[in-house]
Image 1: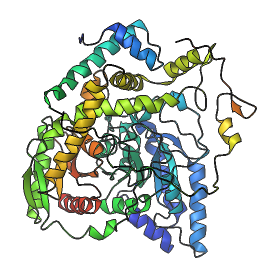
Image 2: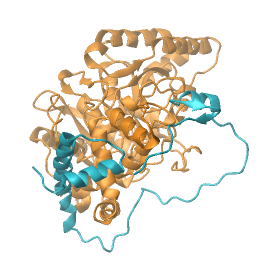
Image 3: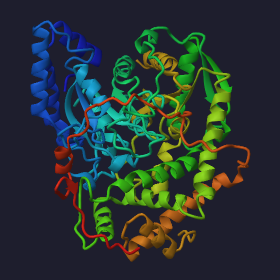
Image 4: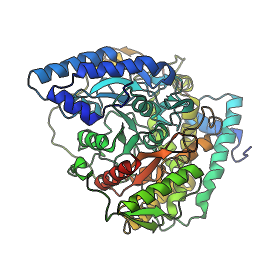
Length: 476
Length: 99
C-alpha cells in the first residue's frame, strides 16, 4: 500500500493529463489487494482482468486525445447489490449465487462513462440487512485497521476496500446507515444523498422508500466530485427527482463562518463517552472556525429505531417475495410450486433475512397492520415535521455517526436488538429522506476511528459538504 | 425470554412468508421477534391520531412518457438466468400448492 493513498482527484487529474497511467495506478491497487485481501475479505469478486483491459483502454483514449471523463482511471469497488451486466451479483446471499444480471445499474453506467475502472464487487450483510457485514453468506469482512473487529455494515466490504487501499473510491447503499456506519468504523468519508438524488435503477431493493446509493472516499472533495458524477435524474427510476444539480465542489473552500450548527439536546442516549467527546470536539472546532452552535430539539428522534425496524422489514418482506426460484437464482426442486417456493426460500436465505421477512410479514398481517406499520408511518411524518421545525433554527446538525467504535467480531451476533441499536443515529435521515454524511474526526480510547455525522435538510448537500470540509480541515 | 408471541403465531407468519422453520428455530424466532415487539412498545405513548401516514419522503405523481419504442431486455438472456425455461417461458413444477 502506498504510504499516502492518492485521492480520486489526483488520480483523475494525472490520468487525464497523461502524467499518470491508468494501468500503472490499477496495478498498484491490485498489488495491495493481493497483499491484504486474504485477511480483510472486502470482496465477493475481484475483476482484475476486466479492470486491466478497461485501464488500458483509458490510457489509449488519453493517448488518442480523447478525455475519458472526470473519474479517468480511478479504481472503484461496487457493493455486490448493484447490478453489473454479465458479472455475478449476489447480495452476499446463497439465493442469488451465480446470478448474472442482464443489465447494468444506472450508477454503474454513469461511472463507466466517467472513466472509472471497476476492480471488484464488495461483500455486504445479506441483502444489506445488518450493521457488521457478519450476515454475509460468504463470511464476514474484517476491519482493515484491526482485523479482530468488524468493518461495520451493511456496506462493510466497500468501506474496508477504501480504508485498506484496495480502491480509491467505492459505493454502498444506505437504508438505515449502511454507508455512514461502516465508513465511521473504518475511518473514511461516507455519504447518503437526498432520497431520489441518485438513481436506484439496478440496485437490488431492500426497502424501497429508504434505500439510497452513495460513495466512500478518503476526502470530502473526492465525495463532492463523485456525487456530481452519480447524481441526477434518471427516467428509469420513478423516484428519481428532477431538480437541477448544484456544483458540489464549489462550496468546499467557503469555510463555516456564519453557519448555524445544530446540537440536538434531546438526542437519544447510548453513545460511548469517547465518541461523545469527539462530537464535543467537532462542535468546538466549528465554533472556533466561526460557526454558531445552536441548541435544537427533535423529539421524535428517539422513536426512529422502532419506526425503522417496522417499515424496513415490512418493505423487505414484500420486495424479497420475488425470490421464489422461478426467474433467477437458486431453485430447490419440489413436487409442486408452493413446496418449491418454500424449499427454495428456506435454503436460500440466511437467519437475519428470515428474521426480517418474518418481522415485516407480522407487521403487515391482518390484525397487526394498524398497530405496527400504520403507526410507524405516522412516526415517519412526525419525525420529518420535527426536523423541518429544527431547521428553522440551524443549517445543519451534528450527531455521532455510530454509538461506538468498531466492535469485536461476534460481539452482537446473538442479540439482534443490540445490533439494531448501532443504527440509532443514522436511521432518522432515511425516514425523512434527508442527506447525511460522516467524516472521520479523531479516534476513541481504543485508538480506532470515530465518525461525526452531519445532517442537512432535503437537497442540502452543498451546506453539508461545506461543513464536512470544515471538519476535515480541523481534523488534519 | 419473551412470551409476547406464541410458537403457533410465529409458525403462521413463517407460512405466510413461505419459510419452513424447525421447532427449535420457531422457538428462537418467537423469543427474538417477541423481544423486538416489546422494544417497539415505546411508540404506544405517542398520540398519533392527528398525524397522517407518510409512505415515502416525497410526494410522488404518476410519471408518464411518450409511447416510443425503446430497447428491452433480451428474452434469451433473461431466460438463460432462470433455473428452468422451456419454449420461451419460465418452467415451474405443477400447480398444486394447497395452502
